[in-house]
Length: 85
Image (cartoon, rainbow, N blue to C red; front, top):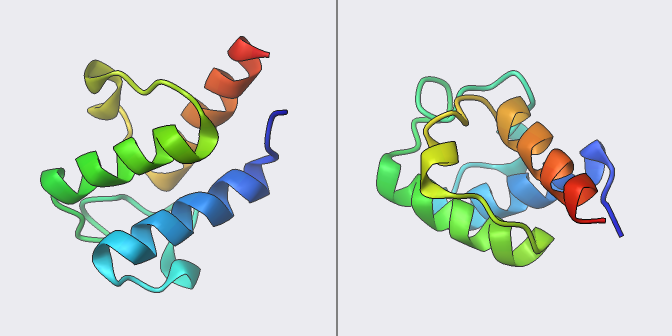
């Protein structure tokens, strides 16, 4: 079953918090992973792998570069879930 955007955001925020120590409340849709949240590429890959497991979606390496903001990631996961359903 597909998650709502709010559920995806909450889950993603939890993964970011676990990986980086950034409070989940700071992970908001308009935030940039690199500029606002200061997440490096290694942490981002870990977050992506964990998000794939958590939401049961595939996020290919070439798609990761396009995930600049939290909104990008939420939308990507949401679309991937919808495509699978």
